Length: 102
Image (cartoon, rainbow, N blue to C red; front, side, top):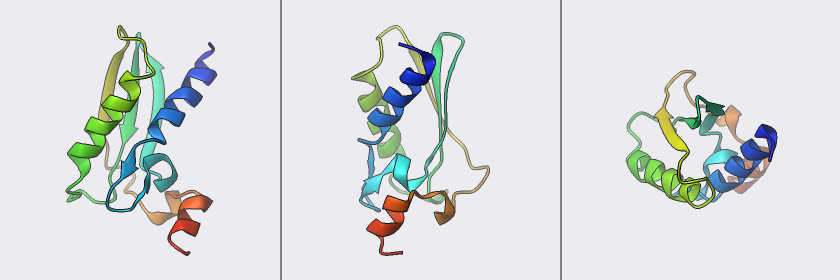
């Protein structure tokens, strides 16, 4: 599998992680800022809708669970919470906007 195909597989797995407050997956919500394979591992940069998000830890745990199901066990996973740039609704997909009736 090529790195591009790997990124697609990772993104598909991340679509199974739902923000319970918003009721939509973290990819369409625009919380996934980066997916990169570096140094024999996988780095995921995520943000939350706000620094006070009470579901942040649960979302990160679900990211680990979903990716563990599709990644080789030897691949090191580094999930980082980033705050720059701040999340805004502009990051949402069209389907997420439709979900909220925007």
